[in-house]
Length: 230
Image 1 (cartoon, rainbow, N blue to C red):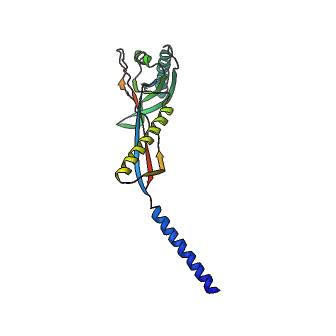
Image 2 (tube, rainbow, N blue to C red):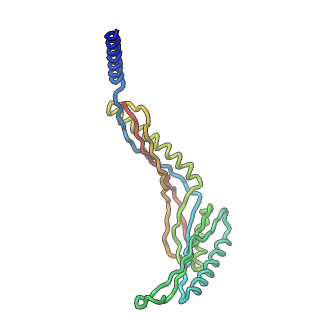
């Protein structure tokens, strides 16, 4: 009785072993193919941002700050008088810095105040007028002119989707060349990128009329995909 039971158990183990070996032959160990997919969408911007710096210097901190406030208010008034839709004007930062003489580090020779004003608008065709008015009222520096679009989030998603499709195509071509077949995606990594702005300006304020030439901006996305292949 005991021998018969042992023999039956041994036979079952042999059958299971052969079944596992048979399954292993039918289902080989999968390979992986890693691909980076990229996509780019070109779009015309419909929003713009430009920064203005107001700088003043005086022998006392109070005087430097007071003169700076006066010039900043003059700038804000000039900008707000220009008719434009959806215009946002805000102060982004104020600094009051002591300036020391190289021969005397104990007492400042003067104080420098700086106020930064950022203007955001949907009226891109009015940008030149804003810049000209800022120059007229004596703004110290104009810079960081950038363009953007209010559809950026949707366009990023669209570009990411196209990047995945490109990754699939590349993976299929590689798998075919290697005699394999793509089965499924086992890992996908995606980190949204910042769009490439079409224009950037770092210039001193000028009295001449300022022409603004707007070009297309590119929104580029990439994904890292790992495929399982047999």
